Length: 102
Image (cartoon, rainbow, N blue to C red):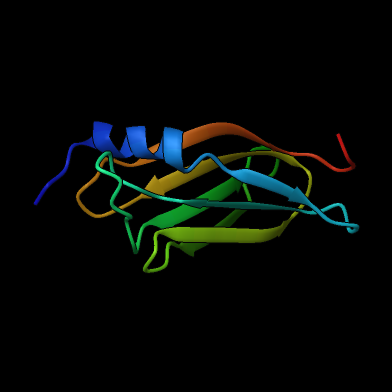
C-alpha cells in the first residue's frame, strides 16, 4: 500500500526530531523513532546524516521498533534524510551538534 509523502513528513517532523547527547569526547548522538501519522513504527527506514560543511555522510536503518541511533558525531551542522518504502523522502535541515554543555 502506497502512503503519501506528507505522511512521512508529518511523522519525521513530529516523531523523529533528533535528540542530541553529549559526551566527554565532544561528540554527539542523533537518535529517534520513525512513525507514520497513525503512530505505527516504520522499520527498515534508511536514515542518512550529512555534515553540511564537509558533505560526509553516515547511514543507518531503523530497527523493528522504528528506532535509529547514530553515535560519535563531531560538532557541526547536519541534515537528516529519511527514506522509507512507500513514502516520499523527507529531509530535516540544520540539525546542530554542539560541543560542551549548553
